[in-house]
Length: 335
Image (cartoon, rainbow, N blue to C red; front, top):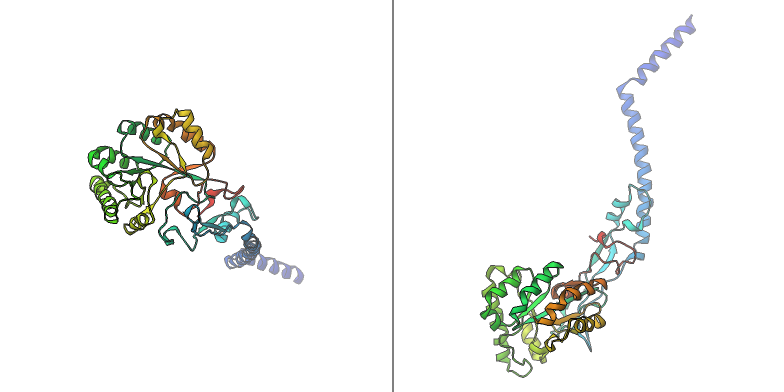
């Protein structure tokens, strides 16, 4: 009988212990602690693997420099793996996944603005982008169709405007700005900048800045940054005076030679046969360019070249949606 009573008491105590909320909390706490230790171990293992492979997927930044032939060449951001962000993307899978690596761009120590005044002929050779330099001092009848083609392809270009032309055609100048394109300085009266005096050089550049700013008014969404000397003619002092006005001097590497009125096929073949990463492509509002522009844009895109403004091309920033920089990795994973 005593044995039966003893067993009964033990059974009741066991039931009370099992159904006790404090017991549930204790067991739950033990489980959470065990899970935390497991997760911590998994995190450490995965985190350490990402950290160990970080250098394998990194590219160092490249400084801007003065080249003896090509003059000023912009730098290019490097990339490195963002370990914390990469871990957060991979931890649900609990294993290393190269496609989920997240990158951040690292700026070079020397940028284009840090170099002494020097003209720029092209962007960085590792940056798969080109830019249209459209010098405007005439050709009004072709501008509207060119702007429509650029809009169709969602392409932004850099229009270098002669100051005298802006004064005489304020509506067209505002149309270019309204379309979201970059505007640059192309002198006031289109002189040979190589032979005119220093005082005249300053006047040509300043008057053009003034008339553009007055015409664009609040539409000018950023300061004028670039100067394109007419016919590409300049001397060292020209570049220094432009720099005094906070303007970089920009030239070109590929010329459409559209002023000679080539057929669309000739113009397109001329550009596509010479184009390269970082190319600055010179054109004007001519009938040849207007008729060629649609196919030219398509041809450049088929070569996996992005088309941007001069400022975008000459910036250190890497292109995010192009896999050339990262092999098989996805550039959308750049922070």
